[in-house]
Length: 184
Length: 184
Image (cartoon, rainbow over all chains, first blue to last red; front, side, top):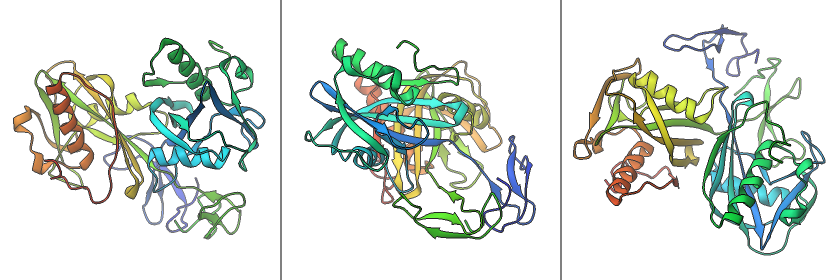
């Protein structure tokens, strides 16, 4: 961030009055430009015993399997964002169940929220950001080829809870040293 | 948003290739500038029968009572943000209990997350953004002088759950027509 989005003036780093953090401040108009964590919303689409995964057609992690999820947009609710991503990435219609996982990833300033979700019908196909979309039984999950720690962790929790007979709500932090293989 | 933060060039509105929404795009360097919802983290600090509220010293809603909460910062986890806000606004040390409420406010593109929290000791004072900090019993809550719908709703749910003998996790959407008085 080098230039002011309001007036085009040069930005400098400084701590505004009453604040205690370095912010980008405009040398010309004085505007302060805050940066804040981003929210990613997604779901675990379930059809019977199986869950729906998408093979990513875009970077990062092109070619790896993911749960449908993406950046929440302005003007949306969290459930709306999760349903939209399922529609866009997998052409699947879901009915959301309760929020299932909520992860903070402070090293990349992101928060991920996954809902459990019921597929309304066994109908899906690859959206623009997916190479392939498929239903997987637990013993078919490509654990070594999952896209992100949040996806890996949500699926691990999901199958463990399902075996245990009840789904909780899980809030966890995921650090930079998290490896996909952990607990895999 | 008028100028490119990367190169200072003029921004235009357009739909990038593979996207379906209007974004701010730089006419010079082609950078796309996304805007995304912001996350606010807070808590309900509890000491015995009472909860801790702060009288706001800043706009918006200067002079109204609020739960300690504020914008999550880069590099934080949700629990860290909630604890920091309690410390900054009320000079209070809390131990967080499970996440309690999660609100989407699509009309202002915000998501609020409140934790229940146990005050470690009966010790607090007004931080820079507060005029006054006080413990309130349920029958003392200034319902008509609360700052935000999210605060009002979290407190209503909290006291109802406490009377009911158990705390759930509540996820709700709050629209622009929500009035502080609703259910008040």
